Image (cartoon, rainbow, N blue to C red):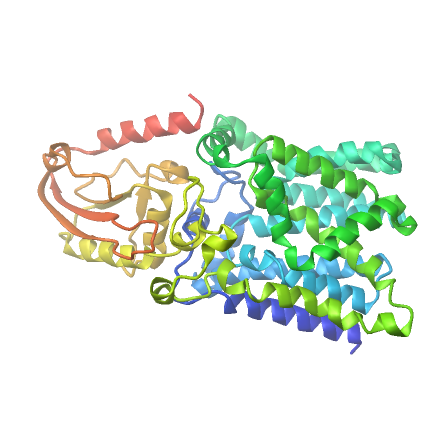
Length: 509
């Protein structure tokens, strides 16, 4: 077997190993993952906050046993595919095995490890951004029109995965027009490819139109409650963190694209980088939205750096450059991943604050990073709900209603009770209610600051508080499970009215 293939296999295996090694088994899945997993039971061409691609992968996970192993396998696999694309891009740019290895090391010693531990649209988003640059490079190298159709396919999959790729398009097309790459607009195949992409994404656009474009509501809520806490300066500064161990590689990529004659045909990538970052900064975007810009830069940088080792004394620097990214990355690895056990974090808190990792979307500092807090307390909650469910009388319908999608999805994933289904008047669960069958009993899962009132008590014959999430590091600490047995009235009209009111909000009515 060729050295190149052996090296690629090594990096692939190392990537998989790292993805599982940095995740302590005492952590549960992340709240967002539960929503995507539940979408497998309600396939559609769109959802309130995301397009459909993630739900299709959820079907595969469900078929493979719906375990945490498989939930974590697929983002790791997508991360591996991203490395493979970068690996091949380096080769197409004329890079040798050393350049390929430098690019792979740079990808491994980066924020990609953290992103690829979560079953969210972000991993595919970065892969699709990388494929866009890859297919364009291949087109300008070969002028073969097939690459334009693969470009369109990459955009379409990216769009059906996460609308974030539209920002790349907003930066890319002006960049092409500003450089010598504008010749691409003379190809009729570009327009046929764009028509193909439009046809592929049309089902999702139709779904959005039929449902009042809920993506706009999602964007408004995101801007009002999360993006408002972001700053443009902070956005730009954080760009240095994602691939900081290999900063010299991607910065070299920018410089090479700007000044290295061999790469003059690809200078549109520099303008795409500048314009896309500017657009994100203008809209106060989250810093990680732009991570997809960097894998291609790493490929160009690795190729350019590899051209400097032509004499003996310079060759001695080659292994040093390979060691710099992991040497800088390893000290931060346990801080930026859920590496330590929750007990270890409680007893001897890591220095998350030194890196600003414990600042949440609310703009405040907390004991641990928000993503970590969103991975705790869920299995405890499911156990409490199972206990309440087993106390219910047989023969009647027991509905479980939660405050948010994290609670509902976690109960559905971790519950040991066959057939149990939790719902919430939040996110896509709003459309999954069965309001025809009579509700006899109710389990309410409420956050710590909500209390049971006479209104709820008067609807039922019996009430009992079952328990609360007690994990001190959980974002859901204090979330309480309430038991209501024996409905005195028909609850369906009341629930229907509340559900319809929430739907109107999402549908922009």
